[in-house]
Image (cartoon, rainbow, N blue to C red; front, side, top):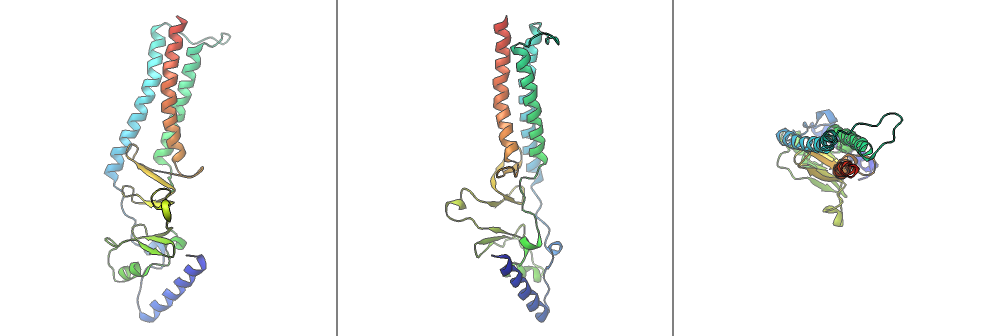
Length: 234
């Protein structure tokens, strides 16, 4: 639905309502409130994810430190060359910091929620307008499909309708049943971190998610490499 078509539709709706003496939301603020996310599920999942990340960091950093301490190893002085253990521990600390920064970005960053605006919310589909005009709830109403677009009756926003195989794979916008928001470039809702994982390019939080996984793998490899460097030195 083009912008000119929507504006024309809004004008016709307003004129018809004035003549009939009917009233319906004309501003974003007048729309029903956004649905409440499933906070209990989100908290449980996010607690699990944060705990997993912190435990992996603790093990990957703590284990080689404990081993090097038991071997009597000390950090090289200012004029001394670095050995494998010093290099390995430095890399581990860097990986831990990167993982923590990405964890904060994943927990508190915007995955790409499709926010309400006059352009996205209006004109209201007839089914939605009729219910709101009479004070009825939108609960139980199916999404409205019109001219290649979908109107999400939970978020009250228009979004592009996927076609062909994209309907099941590369869906541009999807409504998450846990977070209760329409998310752009949606990939999946992560049951470990309690967040929608989405993004394309530099947008969303997909980058944070991938880097956390990468740092977990790299941290485990670096951990054992550091311990091995200490054992070969002996």
